[in-house]
Length: 197
Image 1 (cartoon, helix red, strand yellow):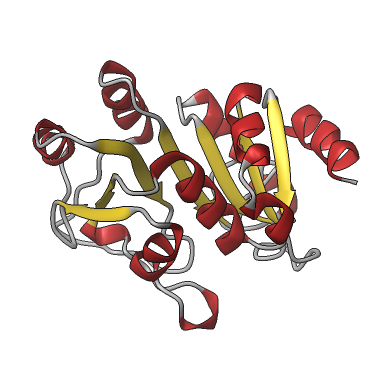
Image 2 (image 1 turned 60 degrees about the horizontal axis):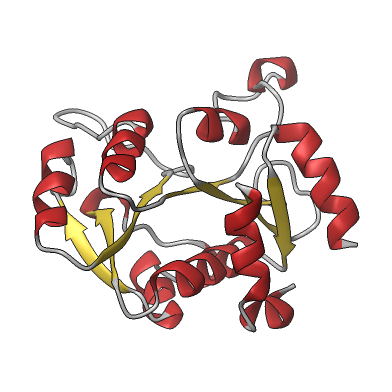
């Protein structure tokens, strides 16, 4: 089933590889466990959100074995905040989390996905984009509020994109991970993959 779904997801998004697990949190845990266990992950303070079931990004990261390194502030996180945290060393990856169910307005700033992708690439570490809802077609075509597309995240330079199959349109509960075939293969080799598929 995963192979069939993977092929369809690759066609939908243009990703080299795709993996389906049981929900969005599982996708994030699997990615972090595979690529960052025992090491630091940079996340903006403004993206330490609570997801379904009362679980929060820091708790999910802890369960994966990754160490959270907060950068910036709740309302303003600059690219320089990430750059300064990278100097401290032992960073496994940068995580960007899409705030899909609320907005921070006013005196705000966020590092863009392309700028984070460039910074991650310069430092030889991956960028993981937790996109939350995960839309595959333009929201205008569905008369929905604007949401980023999974394919746009990949085009912007995210190495891995994690999305939920159920949040946006009430589809079947699923966690989807998109990215290069080599990284997806690494995730499949993690023993957790079988437990979470």
